[in-house]
Length: 403
Image 1 (cartoon, rainbow, N blue to C red):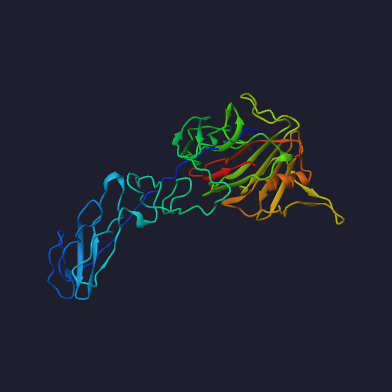
Image 2 (cartoon, rainbow, N blue to C red; image 1 turned 30 degrees about the vertical axis):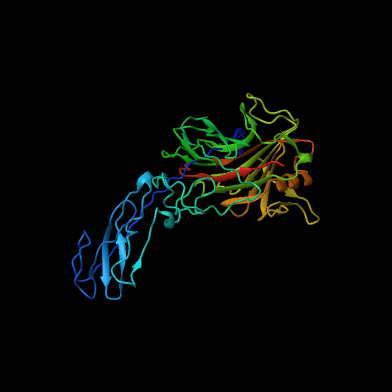
């Protein structure tokens, strides 16, 4: 909804495939290597007995032994349930009391490369305690998500792949109290793009580099809460009148949106408390749209024009706007049509944000940008607005709670 015609924007969740490659190299001196771990003969370092147990699921490999101690190395192996040990790790110590052993039991020491029993490293999902991302996407190549919000900690367990132009999935939080809806929403142009999701995270796949043929995005895969297109998410506390909002804690993070896209919030305000029905794809006159762009792609811009500030020294553009309680500065874009669109664009690209969305609502309200206290916050969308390419763009974490 950031350019004319982009009114329908709905978010989707994807899964990050994290290929794990583990390699170790063992150098032994003078004596020839014996795969069975046969006894060595050199006092300065030979091949000693193999590790007693090796890595889980297989016997140990070589053991290098010297008069001052040795290091035991187990071979790579696969354990029951699908866990994969990091190659070369494991094995018990060598033959002397000062040996050093490198342990790698059940993959837990590999900082999330392997999960607990029954979880496969193949897709990089899960990981040992403390290393998996809150929404379940892990793998040591991306590490834990630095963006969290203690006031909004929703998680969901559903996984899948959506291949249709306007596909979707209802996602229920792990505690069963609330729902989010995930939508592919390739409204601009569709050429086989897909959305993979795991819980409240999703990734867009566009291997054929489908691109926009005009100024409109090819789509806005997204997650949302509220009532839209006949899907009503439970526990959203929406619609809620602006005058009664106390806080809207949220977190939204990404690993990037490719070369031509942005991750953003899209908040819809309606003039009454009535929920949008299945045939209503836009807000009626008397409502408003509020968008928050975490970055602005090159040669792309929101609807309208940059807000003009009048002062005694003359007009200037509102390009260094501060929002109380929110980090960074913002450029304000306004489209004064009815309903109006108010867009906050981060001046420094952000990979995520943990904040109170009500701070933006109050800022727009107090500055008379087009939102009024009598309106109702009706829907909260979060997703990826993509004009071209975008293969691998992802929302790694989204949560919003309306109080």
